[in-house]
Image 1: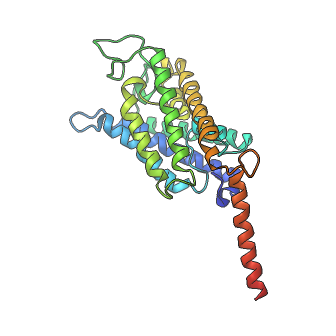
Image 2 (image 1 turned 135 degrees about the vertical axis):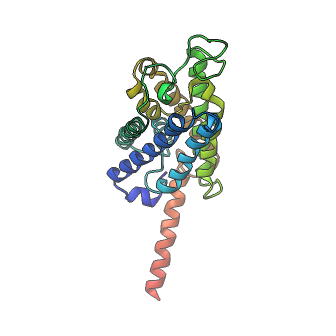
Image 3 (image 1 turned 60 degrees about the horizontal axis):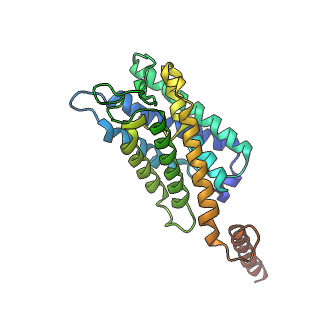
Length: 280
């Protein structure tokens, strides 16, 4: 999260990258649900929507990962802030605002294309929510889970795992270059698990974007899709920071700053090479 390219990139440019990336996530994922999921006989179904969300993250991770880190999600931004991978409250606020704007613009585009009937019901226009009861044995998404408790638990646990995968896959000790694939596949799996429970959020900006248009229950239940994902993300960030990052510390520095120390050594090594060349 702190390569030289990102350090030298202005906050405005990074925020714009987040806006574009979140637009793609919502347009690709929610757009697939609204435009392609319900088509008789040839619709893409749960599996297709799950793949759509995973592919949006995978493609954008390669496209803007080197610019902004490709968060595309307020919960991811705050989880990375808790983990120490992302620094600066001002930057986090700018990222979250950009993500929400990008998501809303995407939802507006989907609405302009599909012109759906907006009735405020949970699940309509790819919105998130939970069913208070089962009707004919199923909830609003065709699953069997109902109630606020299971919805909260599902969103919190899956976002926690999502952040754990993001942080682990982008750890400098992990195989280089494979992070976007692991993250995209993880989001696909998350959707396969939880579409029948909450229509899958794990992303407050994604939930906000479509709820703004659908209104009704989508808005009254929106709070859960901010609180639960953020709680899960922060737990994952703190867990990785204080349990797994400590293994890297050799005990030679205070507060586990070995990463900074190794970076300083690399910079000193490069300066030494330059000085040697100049001397020759």
